[in-house]
Length: 62
Figure (tube, rainbow, N blue to C red):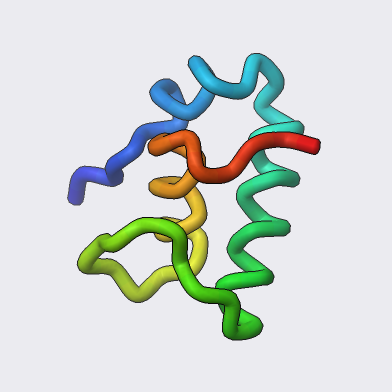
């Protein structure tokens, strides 16, 4: 199973692994609570959707 985007790809956006985890988890919680995804992907996992949003530049750190 290939996971896309990879953590290596996402770390090009966020230099800090912990910051990446926090932002991804926060956005995944929002999606799980009913927030509309900002990207169209054929995936049901909130974490994968959040990772794709970050990879496409739709979610930025605060």
